[in-house]
Image 1 (cartoon, chains in turn orange, purple):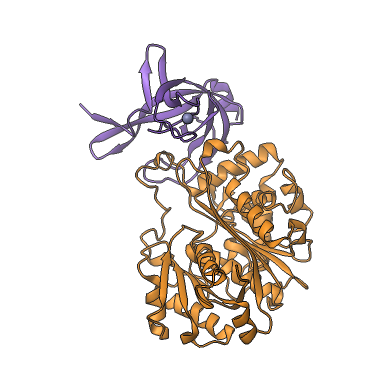
Image 2 (image 1 turned 180 degrees about the vertical axis):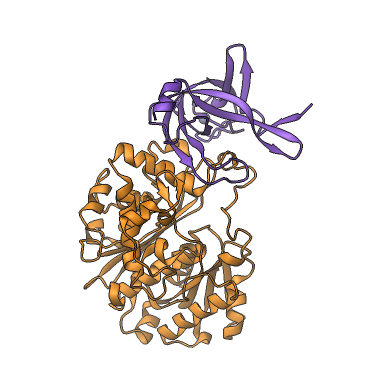
Length: 381
Length: 138
Ligand SMILES: [Zn+2]
């Protein structure tokens, strides 16, 4: 297997932009990544795109107006892990030597999707979904359990959101660039106890893209290519094999595989971007990613270790909570943000001298499974 | 007369001792799951027998949901209930409490029409705390 490098990143502004099509958003991100890589569109040999809602030939819709045609293009869907799945699929093609350079794009126009302004509806044969198990409910039940087994408090969960918005205020691409206090987060509308509105990520339009290349091509174009040292994508498993709802075993397995491949341990990681669709789940991911021992996620948060200036800053981009969550875009965006951290160009949220970073994304809930898909990428400078 | 339909066939049954949830138990490896599947999720065998889980459970955790969703009004409670055979059931919970019920609350199964689809009441399961005092104090 060949080594694979990120040589270009791109992102649209995240926000509510119903006047812009998904293809337009994707094009903005793709063009930025192509320009950042210093290549011509015609140099691309493969395209993987992901989009959850109203998806059909997304890659071709985006690339045709950039002048890219004829080459192999693939369109993937894996709920919120779709973007990470696109990156991993392209990674495999470059690693295997099928192509030397390609682009992965994640894009979503939530405001023009069939679920605009609504909860994502359950599938017809999803029994728990029919019985009222929505995303906020799933994470609220997990949060309630964290309060009973981990000693977490609503203030802890609010603090995750405060941290995200502190970072997001510094990110020009974020949907919400506004700071909040713990009191304001707790005082916002209750959604599902203990989760309040300001602990839920907003629905968002946006796109992100990365250009991946083999070592030879990367050297030709990039002064500082970032290596994808570990790449993992796993599916969840039957919920009856999950003894404890305060862990998401798929996320844990993906992390183990990615660490193993990269030959790094969790203590080597300098910066993390992860799925924080709801504030409380960040504490679960600390433990599943091995950033602390099992049961010590709350302590890690309270110690300030995951804030900027701490031992292991988490979501310095502002995370889904302040950036917003254009479903399939988020898995590409996290990888782009980690790349920018390792290249030392993360601006006001730069983690000093970051050399190893981790991008995680979870996606989808299916009746009777922990999550549908979980992906972890470990990147190194 | 109102028509009623079940949310899904084979999930529950009324017995002389009251209602029971129905799980599927693999004759080969004894793995028991709810809802029952046609093949064993553990070993793939297709000799699945129906097992009564009974009506008694214990609350693992619960939340009060402050958003209506067209089927359940704002202010409804839901949670995970632990049942025999290590089975965890997601369910609506009937309580007058404004706060989520505490973990460990004993719960009893109830079969009831939970929502309407067109002209039909949809029969499904829900759980009720067995001591109303606990519900009020919570
Ligand atoms: Zn079996």
